[in-house]
Image (cartoon, rainbow, N blue to C red; front, side):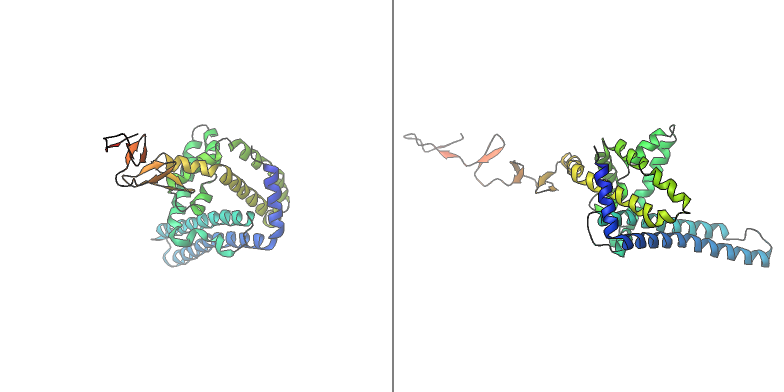
Length: 288
């Protein structure tokens, strides 16, 4: 069972210890992402007005193309910043020093295409599952809840493996995650009565830290098992916590793959040096 009370208490402590960086960075990241779309559409609208006044055409040439391009850029940036905010919240939850650069971690090391592609695929999958009486879409929403964190936190995993890992991590915990969402409904309703100010200055950061805490917990209790499923089934072995593929000709010696020494023989999967037979008149080596 997910320790929701402990996670939410840790989230409140993390928020209290890093209140202004947490509130300020999240607000700044959201504002920047939203402004890109708003500014784009303002520019688009102004250009349209000018062309209407000069040409009389309501839909001037190029307006559709421009609108789509601006929309795609805005959505692209918004998605990447959103994933970065989740990762930033995770780092704050686990006690790291808040850094503005973490909000934009999706753009680092050329990872932006992978992050955007993974979240886009997640949205498409949830939408398609939602077409089946909506309930399957809800289930998949919680099954894929860890994907945005994994896309940044585990760059060694492919997009497909991030989905598999999230499925393993949330297996048996989707109901707990659903209950965690329900536990914040009161805060969400209260935030509406404040015109969204409570969401900016408390509820939003508190919720993001709490779900980052859920990821932190599931990472500690489920991720190693997920690695075993992802790597172990492909012929990899665990070498000090890192899954590696054995080299050709190596053998399994207590979980570690080693190269047999020259002259050793295979004794039930273990390579051993043949012992010398001390019987009189027989100087042959025998395999025990």
